[in-house]
Image (cartoon, rainbow, N blue to C red):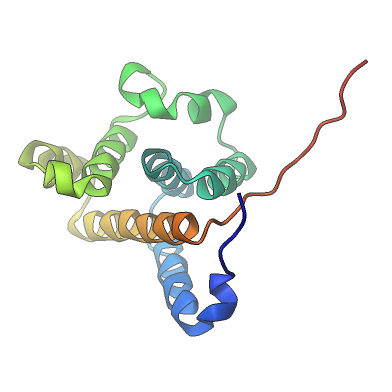
Length: 153
């Protein structure tokens, strides 16, 4: 796949505005591990290889386990996620697929049982931001780094 353009260079002020939202979200008090799980899950749904690669690496750097990363797309079937993470992941899926789900009341009630008013807004902004990044990366064909392992003879 060949990148279409460098969107950072083409519209730096606009990209900086989205980066500012990212900085704000990081300072809201939402757990760093939760932020990365949400980013990975939304990126999986959207099929954004660039963002999946970036956020799985970020999650590992923050101490996330390989098992929880590998099982994230099947989080409902795994006991590895807390009730708070489950609520956030359900909300992530609902908001990411908003044209299909329309953010149903049962999922909203689930997230509200785990998150305060402010946290719910911050979580929703996080989901919106990663969806924006996914769309930008996919639209402009951002390519993740390729790491080649030496073959064992």
